[in-house]
Image 1 (cartoon, helix red, strand yellow):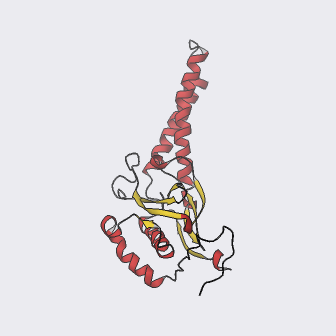
Image 2: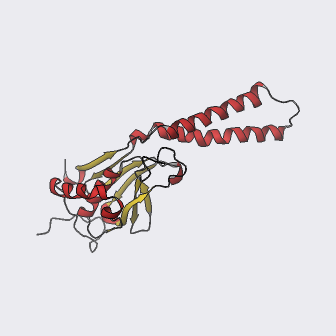
Image 3: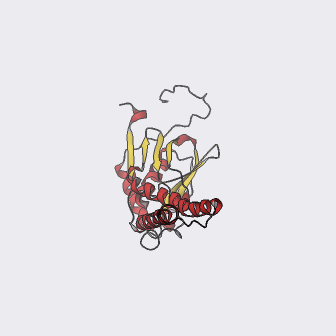
Length: 218
């Protein structure tokens, strides 16, 4: 396996509780039961077509919203962030407050301009309300201006480890999080990682044409 294909770090998603899942599932079942009862089993003959469509929409729309959340809660174990060579590969399931679409892809570490940990809005998550009230996600901004929010189901310590790897490999990128102030428990983790991990710093090839094969400089 070549250097560019080596996986130097991989972190997987973690379940932080079952309250959100149970709530979303309950609302989905209630809406489905309501639709079956009022539209199929006991339809009111006095309702015109427009009224029936409104009733159907009022019951089916919540099913789509809450059912979508139930599905995403079930597949969260597939989430990961890994550093493969000089790239970050990821699959990230968003929470209700951080988006609806599952994010998958990769990011070249050399293209990162700014990154850091940001606390997740927790007002609509019962699981993150108390025990995990300081749950963070990884925010990455590229030179092109694109911004990514990753790792909603990945533990803070694991996200911090990803940041430490990025900071070592690409020191020119701005790291916006003060670990000692915002996540004091992670400071010792950083020192341990820098001693135990064999990380390779990236060389700056901005002056070179895109796609050029580079040889190791001496």
